[in-house]
Amino acid sequence: MTQNLPFLNIVEALLDDSKPFPARFLHRFSDMEPDELKKLDKAWPQVSAPRKHTLLEDLEDLAEADQLISFDDVARSLLADPDPQVRASAIRLLLVCDDPKLVPVYLDILNNDQDVEVQAAAANALGQFVYLGELEKIPTELHQKVEEQLLAAASSAKEILVRRRALESLGYSGREEVIPLIEAAYRQKNPDWVVSALYAMGRSCDDRWKKQVLSQLHSPYEDIRSEAIHATGELELGAARPVLLDLLEDEEDLEIRRELIWSLSKIGGEGVRAKLEEILEIEEDDEEADFIEEALDTLSFTEDMGGFSLFDIDPEVDFIEEEPDQDE
Image (cartoon, rainbow, N blue to C red; front, side, top):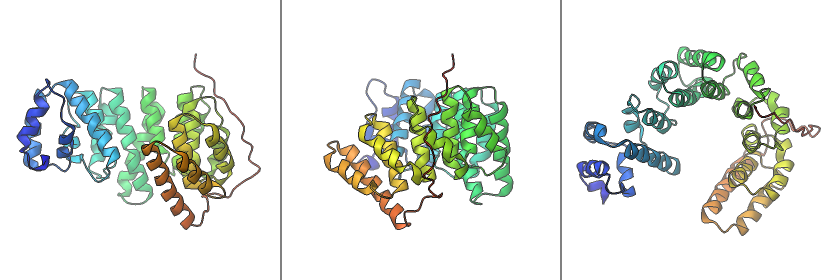
């Protein structure tokens, strides 16, 4: 049992670049004891950069696959690491942590870190606190501070990636200043900006964006199409149901198929359960079958809620294809 193995043995394995780090040890970084964390902190500077990066990537994958584990303690200890890739990974490991004490740390990183990817990761992580503020689960003053800093970053940060991530996080905000920022991003010629705009629209719970979201379901750009599909599920747009069902018939890209399945499970309604059960019956890949079964569970919840979308269905909405031009 690796749980009974002295933690120093884990550290020794981490320092030994001659052998792959055993995957069975990864769980030992979850909910670490204070003395274990001290041992790791002491040894960390001697761990090679590639081993650090690989370890943190593996921890991210494990955290995504198993929501019962937490790497918060080790991630917090790495937020000031000299390696920007380590700092960015640490922030991503903390994405589901809702501790308000992280806000000033993230704001400092957003405004002062010298690495663009790390700044962008902080802007992304602050989105959760915008959401919590909208739910009145953090102090109003803290919520407003986060919004003000993200508004500043979305408008004037030097790097485009940071501005985009700030805008995406502001999607949760109910502040009027956010609306023109989303509109401006949507009108950009760069498809990446359109993706960010759609991402923010999906988070907004605002039916003002229904036409824009629906109009991008046939975009020639995969990232835009994927984000539009996801936004229909976030907004529970019943008007998108027949289009999503049609797209599911022929879509070959695995990630977009997953977005279609997830969004349909959130929207529900006529034909959705039959279609999901049909594709589950012929699915041969166990992982995909598990995903479809999870979608069916989500659909059951949707149906229990009455099958109503967030907004009234408008059958007259035209699915206009608005195709942004690529930057030259």
